[in-house]
Image (cartoon, rainbow, N blue to C red; front, side):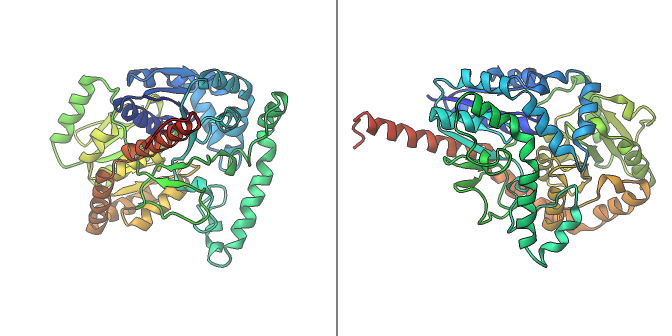
Length: 440
């Protein structure tokens, strides 16, 4: 049995893939704990996984309205990335202190991209660790450049000169270096070697390996990805926090007619939906379709929408239970929501709000399983013909079913845990040889 620590920050979409890994590693006999922000303690402990509080400035966002205000800032297409990185850097000393305490005696650490202290500590303490990537965009590949939310038009220049992207990525790294100054200061104050590279980019990746936690049908491996990168597939997690009575009402609604269109916005964009649900309800009714709206914690976003025989409104429901019953799934394109929706065999309409969602939306279109419509263009007039096309053209469902079956057959969490085991076995073998053990 090995002691394994997962360090993770971000949204529920960032957290759940690691919870899926932790549960499988536990089932294989390992002692696993997840270190994260206090806001996720209940979700982690609900899965019978030990929670370790790694303090960060994200701990301050304790109410739905505070979360909304923060999300409105970080979803800014120009400043959003800087805001979230600076926010995490503001509490980096506390994060470092807490992480340092809990890694002692750990056999391996699994880190997500925003656990900026983990690479520094693991290198200093000579602890094996695996880095991860939840979406292909974050590799910033020149060979297959992503759509960047501040300037989606840049994709048009790639065919003209890929070298422009190489220059652009260097510019992004240079411009963002001041954002991570607190981490460099921390290293200097504690007499640690500085990060091996830019902490947000190449510096986060481990020489032991990187888990690209998405399937090869979603992205092709590129020559400029980090060395020792393995595509595992999506780590899917099944969890349910909705009230039983509401779930029974929802199921009765679904069973009472044609399969509905499902509108959902994950765990982050759902808090800043604006008129998304009003537009969705109006477009659905214009098309004389049935729909389910999943609106999250803030009911002010649906207060003016009247439910009925054609429309069901619910705050929470597990996506893996709801999505397979949908005729069409409309969501923001966050990687966690996308994973569940692609596994559901239904066509998709992606409405990107920010970050990797624009790039994920383009990949959905390339796969032929759906279409993408930016949030700023999401109006009744614009979305109605798009939904109509997705419902009426059979090739979208055919492609969605073929792709979904591949995802269902590929256990991403188990594949990732296999890589974890390989690293553990390799390290134990090396340590045994150093001790003079016999492994004939």
